[in-house]
Length: 302
Length: 225
Image 1 (tube, chains in turn purple, red):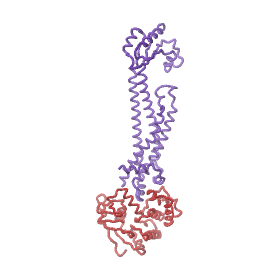
Image 2 (spheres, rainbow over the protein chains, first blue to last red):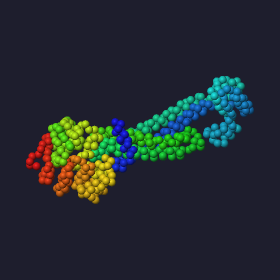
Image 3 (tube, rainbow over the protein chains, first blue to last red):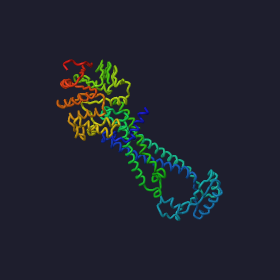
Image 4 (cartoon, rainbow over the protein chains, first blue to last red):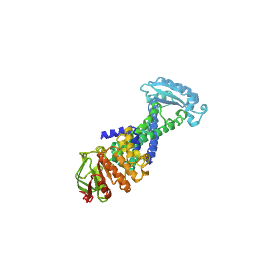
């Protein structure tokens, strides 16, 4: 079973002008394969981008946010500075705190900007002072810190992000999984589509197969003529689809301009090379699907 | 070359042929006759391994067909040129590529072979028709193109199924002369036909054995032929 497969693979890889011409060139299956391969590759690029972006998000929420906490100072304007200073002093004495700093008015304004718009007059609003706390080493004892702040800085409230970070990390992880599942389904659908198209082409060309057999063609030769046709078509379609998807991703608004998860739906660094893998992967799927279809149809027509 | 030993063939449980025994010696010339539907085409398909006998044994070049896998049947078929009544071309390829198809599928296309191809086109009288597509050919041209394709690999055996079925008398005589010429060159020839005039015309030119299929069995035809 392996030797005929190798013959077909060699035949599919070898450019044989004669073999290329024995299968009638036109037909519905040509456009069907090309279009579907392009569409599938386009969707696959987005599924990959989604997976990788979700992965980055999960890492960010899981790692960076896990090591950051916030202290909110909700004190009357006259006491806010003294309470902030007291809280920073407590933090400086707390083991496991790598650094702590009060956010500047500009930073606080930037945080509120998505909701209130630019140029917010922060001075006239009862906005609490925020202190950013970065953990170091094994982290700090959150319960102990809360008790101490309660005693020494009554206006301070510690938020270690645990409440909202955990479900977000889980959601990001599920989104990443969903991306990979989508990619798997796209690959399977590509295989199914190529199988259907190859079956249709082989059935429609039963007369061609009969003529080739009459003149002494082996099953390997006949199969490789069809396999090569479908593999090349799928490779071409997938390359077009992947290229269009990459262009579409590049045209998405930059993450720095608007922020948010959706604008981060793109590749980063080596990730831009991942779409290059899709056309050969699609061609491999097409090769395997057509080879199996050809083997089955040639057996039936024997 | 091709031997039948008590061969039977059944389709869907119905016996079509039985008790067929025959040896086609190298250089021999055979006619196979019988009424339409008597099994002449089935017999020829058994000869080139397109069908497998349901009983007895068919041997191609000494090898029992039932022991050959499909690839080995394909290799054996390269030693047998087959001319069908309906010719069976690839309609999207020009005539010259159809004639060269056996070279293409066996990886033998080369400048030397192209010279042979030109010579063969001349021999069957198709010079100038190289670029025509098969549907553009007349019945006689199609038959001659099919004969040229059957000969391109220099096979040892030529099997022709009603080669003169779709052509006029003059063309059938021309095709017959080509087949007789091939036989004189040492090829083994079998022609399946129900055209008794053709057989009589051939017997005047070549020593031919006439076989008749009747009632599913193979008989040697009488002296009337």
